[in-house]
Length: 308
Image (tube, rainbow, N blue to C red; front, top):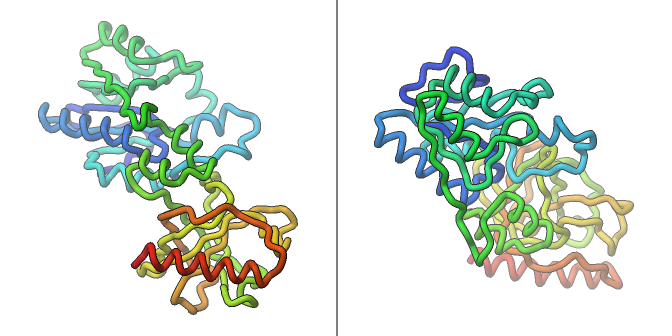
Protein backbone atom coordinates (compact mmCIF):
# COMPACT_ATOMS: atom_id res chain seq x y z
CA UNK A 1 0.00 0.00 0.00
CA UNK A 2 1.33 3.43 -0.94
CA UNK A 3 0.66 6.21 1.57
CA UNK A 4 0.24 9.75 0.21
CA UNK A 5 0.31 12.89 2.36
CA UNK A 6 -2.08 15.14 0.46
CA UNK A 7 -3.49 14.88 -3.04
CA UNK A 8 -0.99 16.70 -5.26
CA UNK A 9 0.99 14.97 -8.02
CA UNK A 10 -0.75 11.61 -7.75
CA UNK A 11 -0.41 8.95 -10.39
CA UNK A 12 -3.13 6.41 -9.66
CA UNK A 13 -4.58 4.14 -12.33
CA UNK A 14 -8.39 4.48 -12.73
CA UNK A 15 -8.98 5.22 -9.03
CA UNK A 16 -11.89 3.54 -7.24
CA UNK A 17 -12.27 5.63 -4.10
CA UNK A 18 -13.88 5.58 -0.69
CA UNK A 19 -13.50 8.19 2.02
CA UNK A 20 -14.01 8.29 5.75
CA UNK A 21 -12.38 8.19 9.18
CA UNK A 22 -12.51 4.37 9.47
CA UNK A 23 -11.87 4.48 13.22
CA UNK A 24 -11.32 0.91 14.39
CA UNK A 25 -11.55 -0.61 10.88
CA UNK A 26 -14.43 -2.77 12.16
CA UNK A 27 -16.45 -5.45 10.38
CA UNK A 28 -18.71 -2.89 8.67
CA UNK A 29 -15.68 -1.04 7.34
CA UNK A 30 -14.11 -4.28 6.14
CA UNK A 31 -17.21 -5.19 4.17
CA UNK A 32 -17.03 -1.85 2.36
CA UNK A 33 -13.26 -2.15 1.84
CA UNK A 34 -13.56 -5.67 0.41
CA UNK A 35 -16.13 -4.38 -2.06
CA UNK A 36 -13.85 -1.46 -2.94
CA UNK A 37 -10.89 -3.76 -3.66
CA UNK A 38 -13.06 -6.10 -5.72
CA UNK A 39 -14.53 -3.27 -7.81
CA UNK A 40 -11.07 -1.81 -8.45
CA UNK A 41 -9.74 -5.16 -9.67
CA UNK A 42 -12.79 -5.81 -11.85
CA UNK A 43 -12.40 -2.40 -13.52
CA UNK A 44 -8.63 -2.67 -13.97
CA UNK A 45 -8.06 0.22 -11.58
CA UNK A 46 -6.57 0.75 -8.14
CA UNK A 47 -8.32 0.98 -4.75
CA UNK A 48 -7.97 4.25 -2.85
CA UNK A 49 -8.95 5.14 0.72
CA UNK A 50 -9.07 8.81 1.70
CA UNK A 51 -8.95 9.70 5.38
CA UNK A 52 -8.40 12.86 7.40
CA UNK A 53 -5.81 13.75 10.01
CA UNK A 54 -6.25 15.02 12.62
CA UNK A 55 -9.79 13.83 13.30
CA UNK A 56 -12.23 16.66 12.39
CA UNK A 57 -13.63 16.78 15.93
CA UNK A 58 -10.17 17.65 17.26
CA UNK A 59 -10.14 20.74 15.04
CA UNK A 60 -13.77 21.81 15.22
CA UNK A 61 -14.49 21.21 18.92
CA UNK A 62 -13.02 23.60 21.45
CA UNK A 63 -12.43 20.95 24.13
CA UNK A 64 -10.74 17.88 22.65
CA UNK A 65 -9.44 16.45 25.93
CA UNK A 66 -12.23 13.90 26.26
CA UNK A 67 -12.06 12.68 22.65
CA UNK A 68 -10.98 9.06 22.34
CA UNK A 69 -10.55 6.83 19.32
CA UNK A 70 -10.31 3.11 18.66
CA UNK A 71 -7.19 3.35 16.50
CA UNK A 72 -4.30 5.71 16.01
CA UNK A 73 -3.42 6.80 12.48
CA UNK A 74 -0.52 4.32 12.33
CA UNK A 75 -2.70 1.47 13.58
CA UNK A 76 -5.40 2.32 11.08
CA UNK A 77 -2.88 2.49 8.23
CA UNK A 78 -1.57 -0.96 9.06
CA UNK A 79 -5.05 -2.45 9.20
CA UNK A 80 -6.05 -0.86 5.88
CA UNK A 81 -2.96 -2.35 4.26
CA UNK A 82 -4.00 -5.81 5.47
CA UNK A 83 -7.31 -5.35 3.63
CA UNK A 84 -5.43 -5.09 0.32
CA UNK A 85 -5.85 -1.35 -0.28
CA UNK A 86 -3.53 0.01 -3.00
CA UNK A 87 -3.36 3.67 -1.92
CA UNK A 88 -4.07 5.56 1.31
CA UNK A 89 -4.41 9.33 0.94
CA UNK A 90 -4.13 11.25 4.22
CA UNK A 91 -5.56 14.75 3.89
CA UNK A 92 -4.64 17.43 6.40
CA UNK A 93 -7.82 18.59 8.11
CA UNK A 94 -7.90 22.21 9.26
CA UNK A 95 -10.41 25.05 9.49
CA UNK A 96 -9.87 26.07 5.88
CA UNK A 97 -10.41 22.51 4.65
CA UNK A 98 -13.60 22.24 6.73
CA UNK A 99 -15.14 25.14 4.75
CA UNK A 100 -14.93 23.43 1.34
CA UNK A 101 -18.49 22.83 0.03
CA UNK A 102 -19.28 19.18 -0.70
CA UNK A 103 -19.72 19.56 -4.46
CA UNK A 104 -16.50 21.59 -4.75
CA UNK A 105 -14.65 18.84 -2.90
CA UNK A 106 -16.03 16.22 -5.29
CA UNK A 107 -15.36 18.25 -8.43
CA UNK A 108 -12.01 19.84 -7.58
CA UNK A 109 -10.33 17.19 -5.44
CA UNK A 110 -11.92 13.77 -5.93
CA UNK A 111 -12.26 14.18 -9.70
CA UNK A 112 -9.91 17.05 -10.55
CA UNK A 113 -6.88 16.06 -8.45
CA UNK A 114 -7.31 12.32 -7.90
CA UNK A 115 -9.08 11.40 -11.13
CA UNK A 116 -11.77 9.32 -9.43
CA UNK A 117 -13.74 6.98 -11.70
CA UNK A 118 -15.98 5.41 -9.03
CA UNK A 119 -16.80 6.58 -5.50
CA UNK A 120 -18.06 4.02 -2.98
CA UNK A 121 -19.50 5.38 0.28
CA UNK A 122 -20.95 3.87 3.44
CA UNK A 123 -24.57 4.05 4.50
CA UNK A 124 -24.14 7.07 6.82
CA UNK A 125 -21.15 8.93 5.40
CA UNK A 126 -21.12 12.75 5.49
CA UNK A 127 -18.45 15.17 4.31
CA UNK A 128 -17.87 18.73 3.20
CA UNK A 129 -18.78 22.03 4.84
CA UNK A 130 -21.02 21.45 7.89
CA UNK A 131 -21.31 17.79 6.91
CA UNK A 132 -23.68 18.71 4.08
CA UNK A 133 -22.35 16.06 1.69
CA UNK A 134 -23.78 12.55 1.58
CA UNK A 135 -24.57 9.87 -0.98
CA UNK A 136 -27.32 11.95 -2.60
CA UNK A 137 -25.00 14.96 -2.82
CA UNK A 138 -22.33 12.92 -4.59
CA UNK A 139 -24.94 11.41 -6.88
CA UNK A 140 -26.12 14.87 -7.92
CA UNK A 141 -22.54 16.05 -8.37
CA UNK A 142 -21.83 13.06 -10.60
CA UNK A 143 -24.01 14.68 -13.23
CA UNK A 144 -21.41 17.48 -13.47
CA UNK A 145 -18.40 15.20 -13.88
CA UNK A 146 -17.57 11.86 -15.45
CA UNK A 147 -17.66 9.42 -12.53
CA UNK A 148 -20.00 6.92 -10.88
CA UNK A 149 -21.11 6.63 -7.28
CA UNK A 150 -22.26 3.62 -5.28
CA UNK A 151 -23.48 3.20 -1.72
CA UNK A 152 -22.82 0.16 0.50
CA UNK A 153 -25.38 -0.61 3.19
CA UNK A 154 -24.36 -1.10 6.82
CA UNK A 155 -23.62 -4.47 8.39
CA UNK A 156 -25.74 -5.50 11.37
CA UNK A 157 -24.88 -7.51 14.47
CA UNK A 158 -27.61 -8.44 16.97
CA UNK A 159 -30.05 -6.04 15.25
CA UNK A 160 -27.63 -3.10 15.58
CA UNK A 161 -25.77 -1.55 12.66
CA UNK A 162 -22.05 -1.88 13.34
CA UNK A 163 -20.38 1.49 13.78
CA UNK A 164 -17.35 2.96 15.51
CA UNK A 165 -19.74 4.55 18.01
CA UNK A 166 -21.32 1.20 18.92
CA UNK A 167 -17.85 -0.29 19.49
CA UNK A 168 -16.79 2.62 21.71
CA UNK A 169 -19.98 2.32 23.76
CA UNK A 170 -19.46 -1.42 24.27
CA UNK A 171 -15.87 -0.92 25.46
CA UNK A 172 -16.78 1.93 27.81
CA UNK A 173 -19.61 -0.15 29.29
CA UNK A 174 -17.36 -3.15 29.89
CA UNK A 175 -18.99 -5.29 27.18
CA UNK A 176 -15.70 -6.56 25.78
CA UNK A 177 -17.20 -9.63 24.06
CA UNK A 178 -19.66 -7.45 22.17
CA UNK A 179 -16.95 -4.98 21.19
CA UNK A 180 -14.68 -7.72 19.85
CA UNK A 181 -17.54 -9.23 17.84
CA UNK A 182 -18.35 -5.83 16.33
CA UNK A 183 -14.69 -5.24 15.50
CA UNK A 184 -14.05 -8.71 14.12
CA UNK A 185 -10.83 -8.90 16.17
CA UNK A 186 -9.75 -8.40 19.78
CA UNK A 187 -9.40 -4.78 20.82
CA UNK A 188 -5.84 -3.70 21.61
CA UNK A 189 -3.87 -0.76 22.88
CA UNK A 190 -0.19 0.09 22.79
CA UNK A 191 2.00 2.27 24.95
CA UNK A 192 5.25 2.71 26.78
CA UNK A 193 6.01 1.00 30.10
CA UNK A 194 6.71 3.57 32.82
CA UNK A 195 7.79 3.16 36.42
CA UNK A 196 4.96 2.94 38.94
CA UNK A 197 4.80 2.76 42.74
CA UNK A 198 5.71 -0.96 42.75
CA UNK A 199 2.96 -1.83 45.21
CA UNK A 200 1.96 -4.93 43.23
CA UNK A 201 5.45 -6.34 43.71
CA UNK A 202 4.94 -6.38 47.49
CA UNK A 203 2.00 -8.80 47.19
CA UNK A 204 3.59 -11.08 44.62
CA UNK A 205 2.13 -9.50 41.47
CA UNK A 206 4.61 -7.04 39.96
CA UNK A 207 2.88 -4.85 37.42
CA UNK A 208 4.07 -2.74 34.52
CA UNK A 209 2.36 0.63 34.23
CA UNK A 210 1.41 1.43 30.64
CA UNK A 211 1.29 4.98 29.31
CA UNK A 212 -1.15 4.62 26.36
CA UNK A 213 -0.94 6.73 23.23
CA UNK A 214 -2.80 10.04 23.33
CA UNK A 215 -6.57 9.87 22.69
CA UNK A 216 -6.56 6.05 22.56
CA UNK A 217 -9.78 4.72 24.09
CA UNK A 218 -9.21 2.90 27.36
CA UNK A 219 -11.98 0.36 28.16
CA UNK A 220 -14.09 0.39 31.32
CA UNK A 221 -12.45 -0.09 34.71
CA UNK A 222 -11.91 -3.71 35.62
CA UNK A 223 -9.57 -6.66 35.32
CA UNK A 224 -8.94 -8.26 31.93
CA UNK A 225 -7.10 -11.30 30.64
CA UNK A 226 -4.79 -9.99 27.93
CA UNK A 227 -2.12 -11.13 25.54
CA UNK A 228 0.97 -8.98 26.05
CA UNK A 229 3.20 -8.46 23.02
CA UNK A 230 6.66 -7.47 24.13
CA UNK A 231 10.03 -7.72 22.46
CA UNK A 232 8.55 -9.77 19.60
CA UNK A 233 7.22 -12.34 22.09
CA UNK A 234 3.74 -13.03 23.44
CA UNK A 235 2.85 -13.59 27.10
CA UNK A 236 -0.41 -14.10 29.01
CA UNK A 237 -1.18 -11.31 31.41
CA UNK A 238 -3.70 -9.72 33.76
CA UNK A 239 -4.51 -6.09 33.05
CA UNK A 240 -6.04 -3.79 35.64
CA UNK A 241 -7.72 -0.54 34.63
CA UNK A 242 -8.89 1.77 37.38
CA UNK A 243 -7.96 3.73 40.48
CA UNK A 244 -6.66 0.90 42.75
CA UNK A 245 -9.34 1.56 45.40
CA UNK A 246 -8.05 -1.07 47.87
CA UNK A 247 -4.61 0.51 48.04
CA UNK A 248 -5.79 4.03 47.15
CA UNK A 249 -2.40 4.79 45.62
CA UNK A 250 -3.60 6.75 42.58
CA UNK A 251 -5.44 9.62 44.30
CA UNK A 252 -8.49 8.82 42.20
CA UNK A 253 -6.62 8.86 38.87
CA UNK A 254 -6.99 5.96 36.44
CA UNK A 255 -4.02 3.77 35.61
CA UNK A 256 -3.42 0.88 33.22
CA UNK A 257 -1.26 -1.84 34.78
CA UNK A 258 -0.39 -5.29 33.48
CA UNK A 259 0.98 -8.26 35.37
CA UNK A 260 2.84 -10.26 32.73
CA UNK A 261 2.85 -13.92 33.73
CA UNK A 262 6.09 -15.89 33.55
CA UNK A 263 8.13 -12.76 32.84
CA UNK A 264 10.65 -11.03 35.10
CA UNK A 265 12.89 -8.81 32.96
CA UNK A 266 13.36 -5.07 33.46
CA UNK A 267 11.24 -3.50 30.70
CA UNK A 268 10.90 0.15 31.72
CA UNK A 269 10.82 2.34 28.62
CA UNK A 270 9.85 -0.55 26.36
CA UNK A 271 6.93 -0.50 23.94
CA UNK A 272 4.11 -2.92 24.68
CA UNK A 273 0.84 -3.92 23.05
CA UNK A 274 -1.93 -5.60 25.04
CA UNK A 275 -4.70 -7.50 23.29
CA UNK A 276 -7.93 -7.76 25.28
CA UNK A 277 -9.03 -11.40 25.36
CA UNK A 278 -11.59 -11.51 28.19
CA UNK A 279 -13.04 -9.29 30.89
CA UNK A 280 -12.55 -11.14 34.18
CA UNK A 281 -14.35 -8.90 36.65
CA UNK A 282 -15.22 -5.38 37.77
CA UNK A 283 -12.81 -3.31 39.80
CA UNK A 284 -13.50 -3.82 43.52
CA UNK A 285 -12.41 -2.37 46.82
CA UNK A 286 -11.35 -5.18 49.15
CA UNK A 287 -11.25 -5.01 52.93
CA UNK A 288 -7.57 -5.86 53.04
CA UNK A 289 -4.46 -6.30 50.91
CA UNK A 290 -4.64 -10.02 51.69
CA UNK A 291 -8.11 -10.30 50.16
CA UNK A 292 -6.88 -8.48 47.08
CA UNK A 293 -3.94 -10.89 46.77
CA UNK A 294 -6.29 -13.89 47.10
CA UNK A 295 -8.52 -12.51 44.34
CA UNK A 296 -5.53 -11.90 42.08
CA UNK A 297 -4.54 -15.55 42.52
CA UNK A 298 -8.01 -16.48 41.23
CA UNK A 299 -7.63 -13.98 38.35
CA UNK A 300 -4.30 -15.58 37.49
CA UNK A 301 -5.84 -19.06 37.44
CA UNK A 302 -8.66 -17.83 35.16
CA UNK A 303 -6.14 -16.21 32.84
CA UNK A 304 -3.94 -19.30 32.61
CA UNK A 305 -7.02 -21.44 31.95
CA UNK A 306 -8.04 -19.13 29.11
CA UNK A 307 -4.62 -19.32 27.47
CA UNK A 308 -4.28 -23.06 28.00
